[in-house]
Image (cartoon, rainbow, N blue to C red; front, side, top):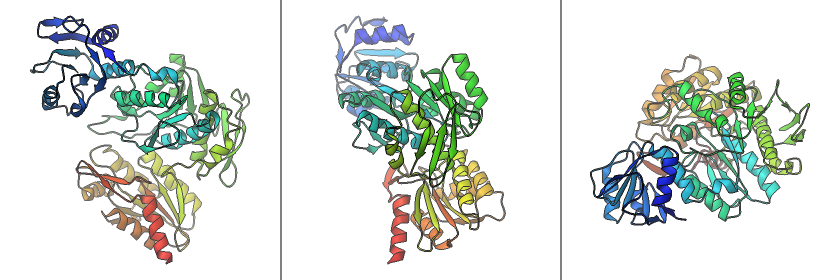
Length: 503
């Protein structure tokens, strides 16, 4: 993979992103001084930059020291939104560094997005579950030629998985991953697209073959993410503008607006849901459900089953069936793959030694927690809902009030604990959640050692109760003071504690 200064100039000028190219001889719009300069790498990490790199000075936390360090390692050319007082052979000054990085990253990796069928999910809850379901269907239909980019794990060869660092990777990483997937002979890619991906232009210039809008409720509202729900929702809706076809959940809040948005953009759409939809979902028994349609243009109407409990997961599976069918899968012949698909950290069901149900789920915002607790209440009407929960530090500050609300509505006992506190004090985060609890009957405990909190919840439970461990799922790290600290994982902790109590 290579990229020339001449090509860079042409791309930036075409997209009205280039301010000027600054060299020792002056300011230009074309590569006058380095006409044959060619780059064999693109990076925003100064530690990886050298004479053959195109280096992007991006991010609110960028420091000129990073650029100075890269120049000391031989760097000759950098891209930034304003020139720095440093000695470089060429400074490419752009109007928007994130947009420039996305377009130049796509060009450097020779547009791998054109060689893949792209399926993108967005929504406040359910993205990972629906993405895993779709991946299972397409993997079966394509003979394991489907890549996956999810909040939890990434697979670029359809076989091996590694931990994801962002729901949607930075643009340079995204195109590098796509190119690797194509090299690995993948034909399809299923990915989650976050609101931040559009807010920070990580997917600028990218068009998806099919986009799926699952649902919406307030989340990720904080000084460093979205200032308001309006901004969050608007960023989410950009998927409608950048997809060839949309799938919409008729049960979502603001469904009428989503339909109107698609119609104004002339983006074709299909709806699914429990009522008033093109494809209707009806629950059966033992995690079975039926999809029906008057038209059934995609030929997916049939009976299905999944491993996960809950009506909401049947709806996620229906979205997956539609998405897989749109990009060419015969989903009926792949339904056994859907039936056996497991989603790490989603609705894992264990039983305590006394018979109490233990649900481990990644639920980490109001809508997902509310839905999970409602399910637990309905499944265990004569018992209590005992919750283990924390909230992340440094981001999504609004969740703390949201969790207080959800707990007040649907919880009986809560043990507030740590969940990726970052640079904040987990006790103070827990106290903020508690400050928003309005149900005086809700029993509140504090235990910042998450393992001890899980043990306490299991010990408190009776046979009729449901223990809900929300937030971490199977994640084996806690983000503490800027580091990923090893953590056993909620599911594995609960499983171990239950087994130890049997001995």
